[in-house]
Each structure stands twice: as structure tokens, then as C-alpha cells.
Image (cartoon, rainbow, N blue to C red; front, top):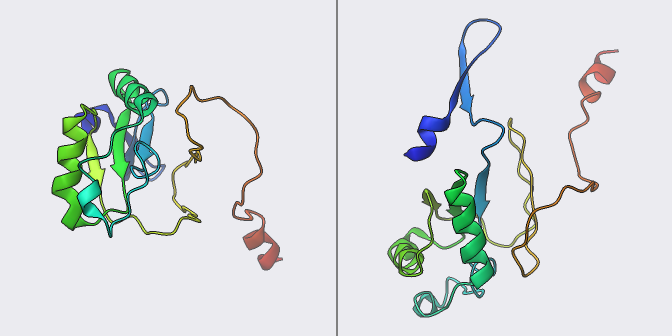
Length: 150
């Protein structure tokens, strides 16, 4: 996989290898499909999956990110049963991508917990250039453990 070549080896203070990371200038985009790059097609209506059209701005922006060297992974609530349709649709419309992850939990209200920095961008109908802004988010209380010990 192309993204594996970009990973930097990380060694902990004890000399043990840690999980590798991408360079700062490379982003790992996880992108939903239904309602984000095309119309919202529920899993219960798979016959629509091959007939819907991509949102033109999504196709252009995502392919540009790919060409800039970023990692594009589609992360969808579609099931493994829909993989063949989904791959065929992505290829039919010339989406450039590195991977396709199926079976994302359905229903939204996601709260992703990870040991790596995660930035979430809610899609609101149009792909545009990304901007930096300050928003309130829920985070773990780093002082909690030290407060409990004292």
C-alpha cells in the first residue's frame, strides 16, 4: 500500500518500537460515502448504490487530496455484502482512494477515542477548502488521575 511507504518509524524512550506515524504534512482522511460523496442510500436499498451520482465537488476535492499525497480511505456503514457494488461505483466514477472500510456503526453521534490525534469535520453539503477554527469538544480530563491520587 502506498501509505505504508510514508510511515515514519517511532521509537519510545525505552528503545521499543511504537506504532509508526505519517509525516505532519500528510493527512489520513476517513470519508463516509452515503450523504457525503453521493446521495444518502440506505443499506436496505442496495439497488440504488450503482445508480446514484457522485457530488461533483466531492470527486474533485478528494481526487485532489489524493494527488497531493494524502491518504484517502472510505469508511462506510455499508456492509461487506455491499463491497462489490461500492468498489464498482467508486471506480466507475473515477474516485482515487487507498482503502475501503465497511461496517462503520450506523446512526451517527460518533465519539472516536484513539491514542492518535483525531480531527473531525462534519460534512454539511459541500466540499470546500478546509479552514482552521476553534470549537468546543469533549476531551479526557488529564488532571483526573492526579486528582484521584492526591
